[in-house]
Amino acid sequence: MVMLLLAGLLLSGQKEEPELQNKIIPAITNHLKSISTDGISIDTIHEKAQKELAKVIVEQYQSGKELSIILVCTGNSRRSMMGAAMGNASAAYLGFSDLRFYSGGTTPSAFNSRSIRALKEVGFKIEPTGEKAKLGPKGEDNPFYQVSWVKDQGWNCIEFSKHYSDPKNPQKDFIALMVCDEADSACTVVMGAKKRISLPFADPKAFDGKPEESAKYSERRDDIGRFMLSTLAIAKEQLKSK
Image 1 (cartoon, helix red, strand yellow):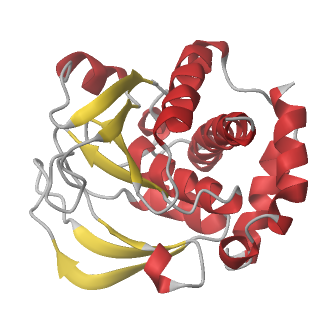
Image 2 (cartoon, one colour):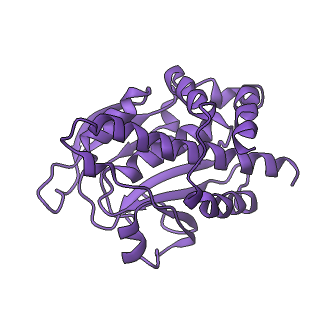
């Protein structure tokens, strides 16, 4: 049911918010369409989180006022980075012009090169700015990157590994999505969050250096992407009748 709803919204979406949607990088649009119609549903363990997130978006979303969501994991390196990117692209495609996704960690490290590669594969433009943040706990180089999903630079962002409370992130009234079990357990209270939702995904780091590495990063990117697309589709449909 959700997949049919999502497919319908994706096919009709460009008629509703052309100013934003027509600016999305075409390869990203094509990928969003692909994962919305591939017949793969979100994992049953994420259904509760989907209902919670859709509900709070319907309750809180207002045109002209940003509704912020921070994806939190331990290292702010893989799942939270890919999730924020896929969330922003999904929001743009479905016409949520005032919904923005951010990322953060509890022990920041660096934007992992494998995560960058997985996002570039589907059309995201990711380029180093030349600036660097504090080194990670193991001495990881932590560059700043310009991440682009639309052609208008005002809709893109600067990403680097950071604590979820970093000044570059919203400081209050945001929704916190806990995308790893470690951060979910270690950070039972997220300061400044008005809603905290548990949304754990398996870490693709377990496959680093293995033959299936690239496939597993792509799989995790798309798992989170499907969650974002289907959840926002539900919220969009409910907002129509609000």
